[in-house]
Length: 76
Ligand SMILES: [Zn+2]
Image 1 (cartoon, rainbow, N blue to C red):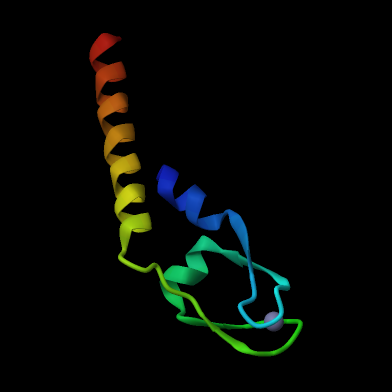
Image 2: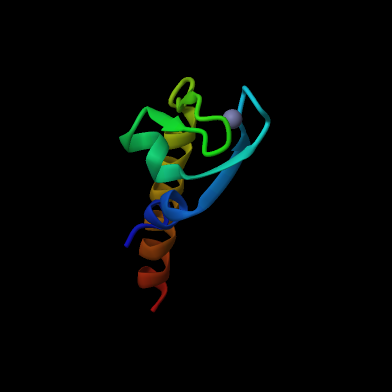
């Protein structure tokens, strides 16, 4: 289990652009589907990771965790 997988499962909420209702999504949703319907006003909301920066950061986290794990293994 990668740390980034855990992060992807966490819930985030953001305000609907139409009605300001707080829509809850999993970060995973942003990756696997591009649209969500607002439960309040039923408008279609486009889920985008604007420049892919968020997932770039997640990969960096995995990389850092791997390095840490390797470092710990080297110590024991
Ligand atoms: Zn809405």
